[in-house]
Amino acid sequence: MAITPALMIAGTAASVMGSMSAAKGAKAAGKQALRTGEYNKAIRDRNAKVADQDADFRDRVTERQEVRARDDFAKLQAQGRVAYAKSGVVASSGTPLAVLMDNANEFEEDIELNAQQGATESGRIRETGVNQRLAGNLALLEGQSQKMAADTRARGHMFSALKSAVSGGYQYSQIK
Image (cartoon, rainbow, N blue to C red; front, side, top):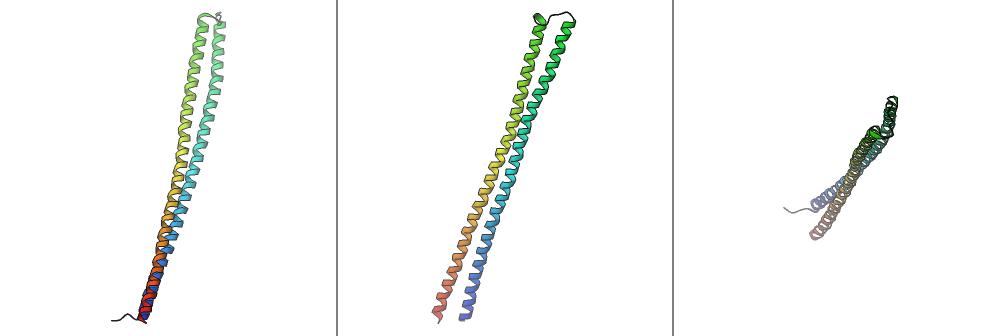
């Protein structure tokens, strides 16, 4: 059975159209992969911003706790001095002074510990933000990479379409 020119043209056209369709699909998939990467990066950037805000809030809370603690401690120390004075003890020397100094030293240690805990927690929260930014950049790079791969596949399909057209044209010219 001989291949008629009409069948050859139809087969070539179908092959070209199939390759063109595949190229179009690959390009669309690449664009979608890039959009997905950009969207995921935007979400990660938003999460990083929230983490930064949380860390800033933690810093402010720690500072405010110190201010309140210092105010409360100053009142407590004043009450201690008043109590010593009411009992007729001079609080500026001897045991009363040592007690007040020990209280002050312990208080300063507590303040420093609270500040270190606040800074550690704040740093941990900030690190979460850094990780979110890095994950966002990675998501964008993955999207860009997928788009490049899809563009390469699309070019391959276009070359396949061109090859089919040229091959079909050559075969057609041999029939005549």
